[in-house]
Length: 189
Image (cartoon, rainbow, N blue to C red; front, side, top):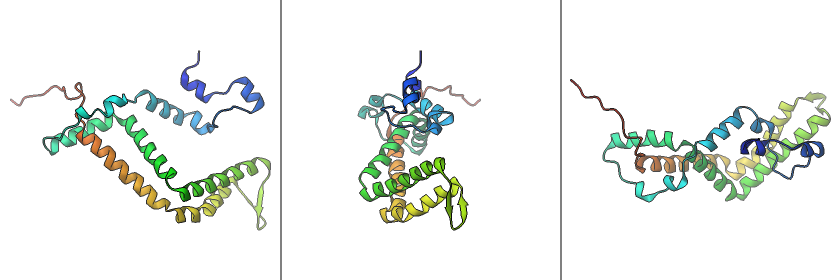
């Protein structure tokens, strides 16, 4: 019997024969190999969201040492939850910026055209045949002005800043789990 993850990433014989899946297309690079393993690991290690946002578990650290200890341990403990927070901030940034959506559509549309064209025929420009890698580079060059006009650079720094503030704040002020703080303490002789 296939697991839930295998069901998401595998096609039925009917879907393979017809080419119609009725599902979102997942590129092979994601549906196989290290990316699939990484996504599966993130999914399996996600902590309960109720525990993640429990307001009773937040308090001010007593000193800088405790804050650093909380920061390190909470980042390790809630790592998968923080990945989803990061992805949520990316989605929020893209959805709230229509010009960035247009730039992404231009870029992915150009890449899709290159993908279709590479499988059918070679592109010859000024008497030289362009490899698919050069064609993808040309797609990026065409999309670059759209990204520049959309302010993609500021969006990237906004996402990074918002992620650091959100995750850093949560990890610093969220109390350690009960099992996390119980360590063997050695006394000096």
